[in-house]
Every structure is written in structure tokens, then in C-alpha cells.
Image (cartoon, rainbow, N blue to C red; front, side):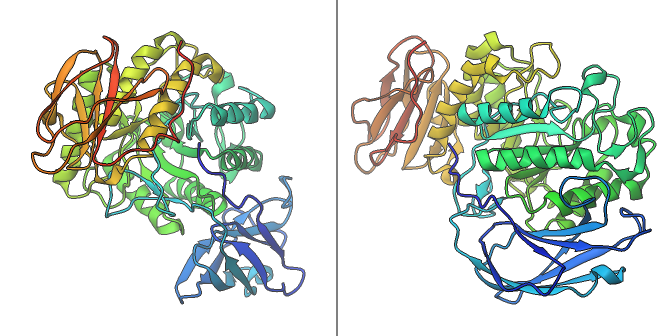
Length: 518
């Protein structure tokens, strides 16, 4: 499970007087609360920026945001600036605003070591998997549903927090949901949600709803505490009624506010839209992704979800840091082949990025074996996944019904994060059947959806390799005979699905989760 080393409590400074120099942990939350002037439209008329200068002299611009009374109330004159410093040492800041009460505020703070992992990043040196800024690999594994997790009439606050606690205990490290569900599909009225004041029929796009933002903040705080990444979608699918009514400036206000308020959180992935082709085109995607890149001081990964196809329509764009694919099939051969195909496409486009498959046909609680075989096929194809936990009850947040899915996923996730992922790539030509993810001359992960015999090509020169059988149902590991050099013959322990790890050096399985059979 993800290390819980984040700084959870922010350093909050008030404008009541010149603040003394304080300490904040690296990647912790700096927060400055200021009182504005009455009478102005808080979302349109007030401009507030802060400029943070690092110990090394780099200046970083951050937008401020309106926060009602500053303690959860929706009425007030409080504006805030939030920032997460990534460099240790003395930082200085100053504010710039078109309002006298907010302009020209200055201060300092010291950023000290904390052990926090920092935000997720795309590493150009190892671009196929996201990493934490600390260098640890992040192999995503979690649910893709319910998309309207934030809908006020769907579940209570206590149920949301309990759901997050359950997912963390079950080993999930990501949760996917959206800010806007307005269409006629995707659930009944209780599933509708959006971030503006007013009802679902005619929201006022000029005023963001602070009740909604407080709800999102409470969920995000709990996810941070529990080590879960939020895959946040701005627009869910089938939102024509809103996307055709909102102006470009009103939509930009939503993007700016969201980044200003939540961009200091390390556990975020931005997703522009779900099945974007229904409401938007590629030019819109490029524009909004570029806006996020401009606004976000932590440069969180940006993606967009598309309709089902084995390709990424924005391959090669510098504005996107991972895919958000949708396939309408689950059989291992097809899933593995599609993941490999997308990796080849991205490599040819000149910008390799993680291949994330976030939706691949609805999986009921009874389809745990189908899910298990699918996720192993994805992983050995060089991709990551979310599980579409939906059995026709659109929006079910009873994650425990899919307990077997999460158990199988945790076994795979912990194994993958123990491997040299950045050096591994799919190469099925190395096995006579099945799928293989390999770091040449060092590490080979083979998955066989059906047991039996197969050959694995190992380097002709050098010494022998250690071979380990991994039971995908329980996580139990057994060491087989030494293998290689050259081609080696293996036979799976049973006729069920099995994984084989072959390594040049002994491998520690301390992190791999183990469960009782059945």
C-alpha cells in the first residue's frame, strides 16, 4: 500500500499582520488567507496572483481563489492562495491583485525535509509509467465507477469517506469521478452533479458553488490521507446541454478555479472530458490541456478519455502525459494486443506516455476471474488499468461487492511496483505462447491465461536466472529451478492461469500481497 508520508496539515497564514517565518514540509501545503473588499463579483471582478521565489531563484506564479468565509461557509470576503513547495530552503512570496486589500502582501517561509513523495510526474527518461517526484513508480489500480461520486443526492458525506477508507484498505490507489454529469444518461436525477450554483436545469455558469468545492475538498483530503490518487474528470460524457450553453470564458473560470484551489494536492490527475468526441474536438482538447499546463504549478499529469479504439487520438502532443483509453472487450489476447499496439503508436509519434486503460466493458462482481485475467494481460502488455466495476446499477458505490477484483488487483499492483518498470517493455516474441514484459538480460514477467508448457528465450551468454511462479489468485510465490542461459522450458503448476517471474538476481517478494486460497 502507498506510503503515507504526505504533509496533511497546511501552514495557514492570515493577513492580520506580517507573519513570522515558519517551517513547512517539502510538498506540504502553504496557504495564505486574505480578506477582500465588499461589492465585487468574487469570480469575475477579483484577480489575485501570488509569486513564489524558490531558494534557487526560480519564480512560480499561482492563482488565488475565493473561499467564502474561509472555514467552509459560502458567504464571506476570504480569498486564498495555496502552494506546495518542492525545494528545501527559504521561500519568499508576494501577491499581486487588482484589489487593494489583496495586493502587495509579502512573506517568507522555510521548506524543510518531510519524506513526502510529491506530485505524480511523467519522467522523460522512463516515460511509460508515472512516478512520484521521489522516483517511486506509480502503477494505477482501482475502480472506474461511480462517475458521479460527488453527487449530493447519491450518497452521504459519511458514505463517501467510508468508501475511500474501504478502497485504501483493499489496496486500491486511484479513484475516478467527474465534476459534471448533466446528460440524460448515466443515472437518474440523484446522479446529476455540477460545480455551479443553481439547479441541473439552468445552472448559473458565472457563480461556482462553494458547497460543491467544499465537498470535493473533503473527499480529496481523505484520499490524500489514505494514499489514493484522484483521477478528476472535468466533463463527464453526454453533457451537450451544458457544453452548448456555457461560454468559453465561463468554462475557463472553472478550470482556473479548480487548479487554484486543488493544484497544491500531489495526488491528482487531470482528465479534460469523458468520451470527449461527444461534445468536443481535438482543438478544444489541445487548448484546455495547454491551459492546465500553464496554470498548474505542480504540472500534474493531463489526459483525456476517448471513445473506444485501440489508439490515442492525441498521440505526440506535448500537452498530454498519459492515455485514458476505452476498449469494448475483455478477453486477454485482445486486450494485450491492443495495449501493445497503442504503445507502438505512441513510440512512433515521438512522445511515449503511460498507456492507461480506464474502461474496458462492465465487470460484475461475479466476473472476478475475467477481471483478473484482463489486468494481467494489460500489465504484461506494458499498460495500467482501472476496473469498470459496474453491473447495470449505474453509480453503485458499494465497492465491497467487488472485493475479489480488488484482491487480485492488489497482488498484481504490488508486484509491478517492485519491478524495474521503467526498463521493461512488452515482447511476446520471447515466449512460445502467452504474454511477456521484459527488461532485456535482467527481468522477465510472463503471464499465461491458461496453464501448460511454454518456452522463454533468455540471453545466450551469462549465468543462470532465478524463476518464481506466482499464483494470481493468492499472491503465493514458489521458486522453481534455475533457468537459462538460452531458451528455457517451463510448465505451469496447474491448468489455471499463472505468472512466472524470471530474474538475473534473487527477487524480494516482501511487498507482494498474499491471500488465502478461495
